Length: 169
Image (cartoon, rainbow, N blue to C red; front, side, top):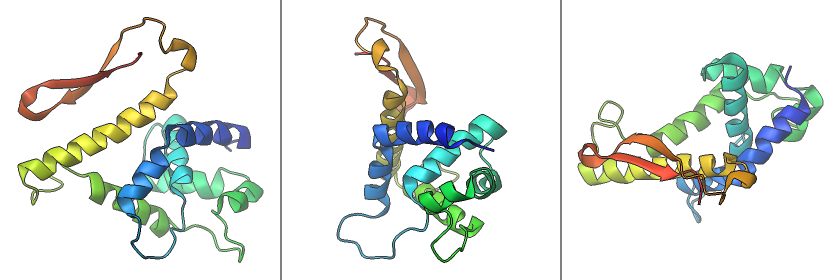
């Protein structure tokens, strides 16, 4: 069972990062029609964090289980996991959102062989920006600006150069 307090702490981190807004803009640009998503992005991202913490993996079925079984029913209602009519979030709805994110950010040759190099680079940079945005929100504020000049290596960039970003200002 995941306590409300634990979920709220992780949810606050997600919201502080603003990553849900960044993803929302990419998934559903302003002016584009469509039905509202059954699963809020901030709730999904929080569940993904807690799934890796509690289950040490990120299986779709475990994310769904955490949302539908590991939270109190009253809290599930509050988060929209259980609708007003009593219907619970389905694994298909979780899969839909996760696949939508993957479709917008996939850049590897294996996942998106159809992309040309400029599109691949743009997607890779966009994906890295989302990761950086989230990580920046997870750094305790008392560590920022204290002269701690660590660099987080994020992996190879175009041409094999190594990328990263400073963990402090």
